[in-house]
Image 1 (cartoon, one colour):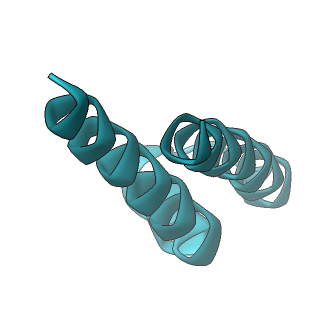
Image 2: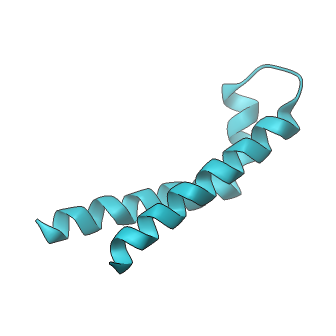
Length: 60
């Protein structure tokens, strides 16, 4: 059971890091509104939070 939780946490951390680095590309593909800077900033913050949660689950 612990291995499954660690795998899910690793995937969460990986997803968060990908969201941080590809935020601009994701906003261009997913959203069609004018203020893409604000959306990219929001995705970076969300990715950071997801990555931190995944890393904390692995750590503890």
